[in-house]
Image (cartoon, rainbow, N blue to C red; front, top):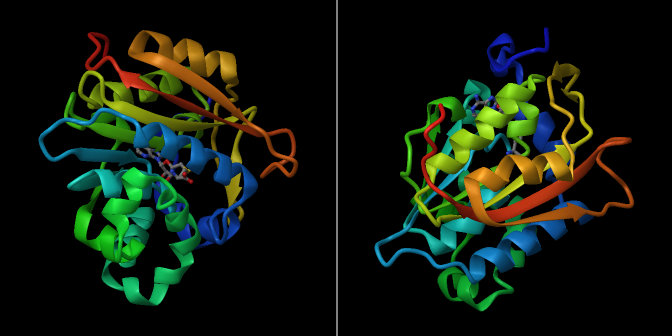
Amino acid sequence: MPTRNNDVDWNTFQPRAYHAHNYRSVRPDDLQIVRATRDFFATANLPSHPARGLDVGAGANLYPAFAMMPLCEHVDLVEHSPANVRWLRSRQSRWRRFDHGWDEFWQLYAERDRYAAAMRGRRPLAEFRAKATVTQGSIFDLPQQRWDIGTMFFVACSLSADREEFDRAVRCFTRALRPDAPFATAFMTGSDGYDVDGVRFPAVPVDTVIVEQTLQPLATDVKVVPIDSEHPLRPNVGMVLALGHSRGASTKS
Ligand SMILES: C[S@@+](CC[C@H](N)C(=O)[O-])C[C@H]1O[C@@H](n2cnc3c(N)ncnc32)[C@H](O)[C@@H]1O
């Protein structure tokens, strides 16, 4: 039987080690992802009421939330692991000490006019403290059609080894968004699991075709962007970004 989401003790996920390995500086593959997400969101139609964003499975990565904060009145981070929830909240309570670590990512967003206007004079973690709420919860329990814009980076593919749970996670994410809400979602390709500080976590090996086929019934204008990397994060594992607009709630659970 493949390892399922509930089989894992997510409290053993070490956010400091994960952050140090992945987000101490901007990797070339993350640079492509940030730019493509930013350029897509910079032209997105958002509602006339103050927009609310969702980042699910945030882990120890703030750059997906940064993609939405300047465009939103509020951003919800929903994360399953208690250890990651503590880490995210500590960024909010002790932000002055950590602020510069995210500057490189933050500045990339400011390269677009729509972002720049909302970011002038604002610091990344001060904004994170002011606009974001971190909640412990599961992607599988998200309410439907609540958010106006969303991100889900390296989560559906990296929470289980069970393909059915991958499909369900993508469905739960897209249906949590209102109809026509823009989203960006990133996936590891070809991964059958990953280590964080010596602890093994499960993954479902997906590829661009699986990502596209999974999203097509759930979204419109789906664009799947393979991310090139001369130096992949792990051997034989790649990344893909998918952009689109949610169709809203689906009838399947
Ligand atoms: C590979 S990490 C990705 C973290 C981050 N989004 C990033 O871009 O690096 C997978 C994340 O999914 C979270 N996760 C696992 N099961 C989840 C669930 N049922 N609901 C929401 N998040 C979950 C983990 O705690 C972890 O933070």
